Image 1 (cartoon, helix red, strand yellow):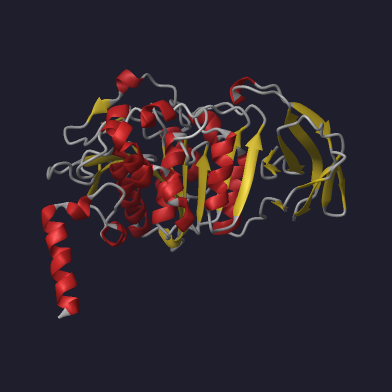
Image 2 (cartoon, rainbow, N blue to C red; image 1 turned 180 degrees about the horizontal axis):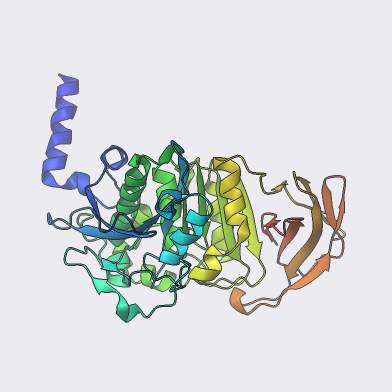
Amino acid sequence: MKALFFLSVSLLLIQSGMADTPGSWPIERLKTEVPAYHIEDETAPIQSLIYEGEPVDGKPTEVFAFYASPKTLGTLKEAEKVPAVVLIHGGGGTAFSDWVWLWAQRGYAAIAMDLSGRRPPAPTFDENGNKIPDARHPKEARVRLEKGGLDHTGVEKFESIGGNRDDDWPFHAVANVMKAHTLIRSLPEVDPDKTAVTGISWGGYTTCLAASLDDRFKAAVPVYGCGFLFEGESVQKPSIDALDDRREAWIAAYDPSSHLGKCTVPTLWVNGTHDNHYVLDSYAKSYSLVQGPGTIRIEPRMRHGHQPGWEPKEIGIFVDSLLIGGTPLPKVGEMSVSDDGEVSVEYQSGIPIKTAELYYTSDEGLRTERKWKSLAASIEDGKVNAEGLPATANTWILTLTDERDAMVSSKVGFR
């Protein structure tokens, strides 16, 4: 009788809409049901496809995506299966054909969807079949889909909180990413057990959520994105604070800090020292929540943008190491700081470390305006040491660069 009672309550919740509350996703359905999709030209090196999105107010929606792989490039060997990656754009972005082209040439199947209900211009190629870069195309060239679902503005991201999840962009973004993941895993040329996800800015934010909810990924790379957007200097904080009595509901439902504690996916965290969208303080709190292994790459004054976000070679090296057996990035241990200002970390690396540096700031005020200084560090017997961290320093990192010119960093030190 007790089991029957709980089943009846669950059915009532679903029928009343209470099961569709913000912060809940139909995980099993999104993981098991391949969405309906249509490829417009199966002979194209970069294919344009439309797949079924999550409904809005009971009405069907569609999502545009670019897809490319060794198969579409004509380089796939017979009976070969390749790893796959899901690519998530940030604010002001779209499905970038340059991005899927980059990963397809690396030997991956890649899908990049538009999460604002639009489709970008079709890719173009020169007479030799080389792709003409078009990531900087004007936003006006993107066409709104007839069934495009939610837009990608502050209204849908923040102000919609309350009631059910139908008008919440974070819900639809994660759900449509998971649908793209299920779709790409279903393709015959893809090894479904070798998939990764990476996203930039708001795409990094969405990567944090997707990797926390979808345990099928074997690697995740949030670039800039993190949780704790309601704290500190984040440019998103005013929008969250403006929610007033709905503020806590948004944080509980959609801030990654409420979900990252469930993440067990190996993760590479990529950010810069001066990013004002995803500030170092919030970044450090976010990577500390994840239960899976983590690698950190914090670059002094890394630029914020889509192209700067997919360019670091460390992203490909990290994903390769987990999906196809490439040599991993250096593993950096816990950082120690002595009373006299000596900073050290132990490390493990299959590739020799050629340089190491200590970066620090003693400035106060906005992080985007603080000046950082650097000191050379010594490398010896699996350990990096740097002397001279001032007692006035309030934030610092050690960076290690191997002979591939791949750079990783320690966790951020705070005082």
